[in-house]
Amino acid sequence: MKRGFEDGSLNEDTVENIDETHFVIDFDIGKTLGFVGEKKVKYADVVSGGEGMTMVVRISGGPGARILPPTMIFMNKDSSYPIRGVKDDTPGVCYRTGPKGWMDKRGFREFLGERRSMSADRLGRVKTIFLDNCSSNLSEAECKTELTKLNARLKFFPAKATDLCQPADSFVIAKIKDVWACKWNEKKFDLIEDEQWQDSIRKDGAWSGKLKNPGKKFFLKLAAEAVREVNSKRDKKGLNYARKAMIRCGLSLDVDGTWNIE
Image (cartoon, rainbow, N blue to C red; front, side, top):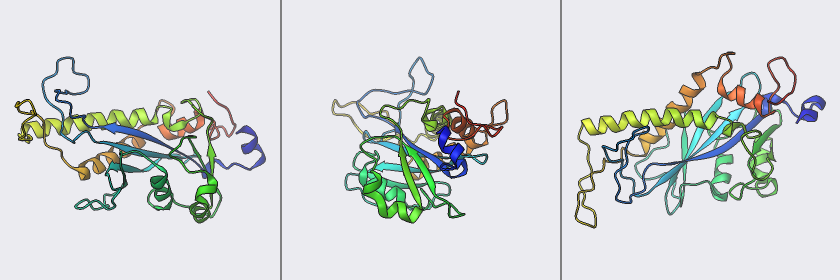
């Protein structure tokens, strides 16, 4: 990395990092789930049929570093897009689907081809995208067409890379999840106050006691709001979390223009 910045083969303004984080809304196992931080469980969580969803987090580098609009991947056994009744028009976020709600090779190709998810550099410079070396991501050879349109190249982290070299894992995702959890709890309280319960019976004959699912549009808005809120936060030095993480992991130069890692 240091050599790349020194010889000009890397430009911090065209470096990006992508990573994925999974949200499990509820596994419908007949248990009563409570709110974050509760020791005594009082209320049930929201019914979603055991579904999870993935947020693809994308971070830009350089002095203007920020968390870019995320892409959500919802569970859909047929990978249908768009999902009936779920328009992909929520500001600050877009979505795709997959059988398990995770990124897969098909989804990765669609991610590269969706301009709200991944766009070319506005000045025409080569973009370098750093990402995990995992089975769901395509190699450069497998997505030449998409990368050519983006004028981009992929750089994979070593296997089992930690938060020391993966900026998104270096507290950025944790900050997003903190905001997500707070806003999600607020929504659950609203549902309780409005008595938005699911009227269904479990196999054992007991009432499920679960709240109604607010729907995918709610979670799209929640994702966009969480990213916007984290982008607005600053540390004691005035750096936003994206900038701080990119510097910490060596994917951007420090504020004094030198390369170093913490």
